[in-house]
Length: 291
Image 1 (cartoon, rainbow, N blue to C red):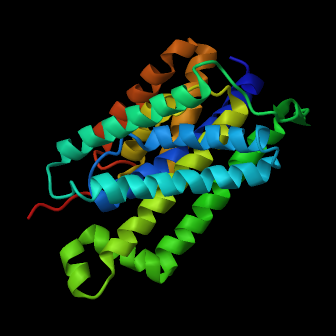
Image 2: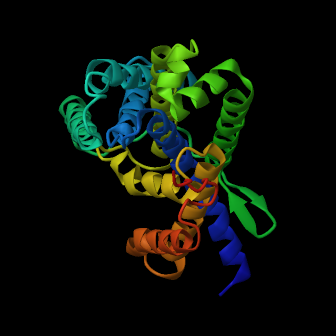
């Protein structure tokens, strides 16, 4: 095994893991406050990529402006899905909400297929020469992906830990009824969290679209890795989600290089099984206390 190839594989895995992290953290935050797995979350990533493509090609907007519009559109769709569907079902069992989210996922996926078709599309971004650091190389787009993920997670950490919104979010996620009695605007906090979570999915989808071709199933390929990152890092933990996603990206790349690309998921879930056997609450999760 070449040490140079191994280190290069880790570098590539960090880039992949950064994209997974951006999608997974929104999924984790939504679960933390709404207590169900939103399957449609990854399809919001697909919508974000396609809206960006529309703005950049048909409207001839600069890519940065097109990406910003794509993120806002996805964030609005995420909020509307909560306001029009999930909020009305919040007193139902979790399985009902999950099934509803599956319906939303299929609706978004086939809406994308109806508008853009099922053919592969791509962003019109320039081909840039990779930077070389000795024997190692990294694409400028990989640097952009990693830098974006780090910036997003830093801002999230500061907001959730030190802002009034972060304190309100923790209160609502721990005990919504008590938070409401204490004067916390729970509905507003939940709505904002859905808006932010969906927007983060849009960011992840756009960055994935830069590295890969666009298809209606673009976000779907992130479903299992995103869920795995949330579980591996510890549900509701922002830092844990980032660590879990990076580990998943690295393990997947190692499996693809030294084993077979088709075994990425098998390797990832093998690591998850081992970690959860040793630490059931995840890397950064807290163990539930029996009452």
